[in-house]
Length: 133
Image 1: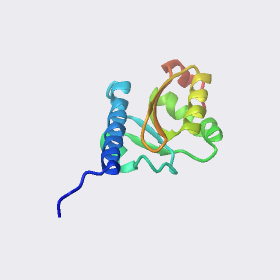
Image 2 (image 1 turned 45 degrees about the vertical axis):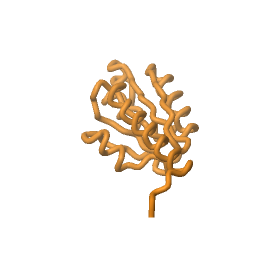
Image 3 (image 1 turned 30 degrees about the horizontal axis):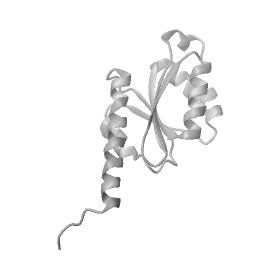
Image 4 (image 1 turned 90 degrees about the horizontal axis):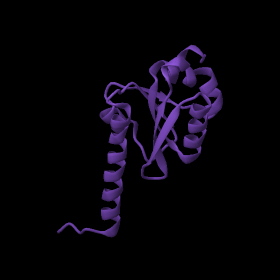
């Protein structure tokens, strides 16, 4: 039986390639510092295994459902200590994280992945570590 190139196969391959490219951008955004990854556990488009391959030395933190409370209790201080993190989340979670980082005086960059998921580079200035937690 000869393999047939279908539209679905072609689009799936293209989506996987663009997702991998966006995930690799995380290394460029971080300047190669693989330290902290925030991952939304319900995310179907991004596998934790793939992220672990791209960021081999990173600490992966699974986000809780109440991201604002998680930020106030733990994530904000963790990001302040690391100064940079990558997040792999849905659009709604992306907007919440970006707002929390901006509120803390940080910056963020977003890249769209497949299946309505997003890679976000989050950075806080080193001086923020003293004021968090």
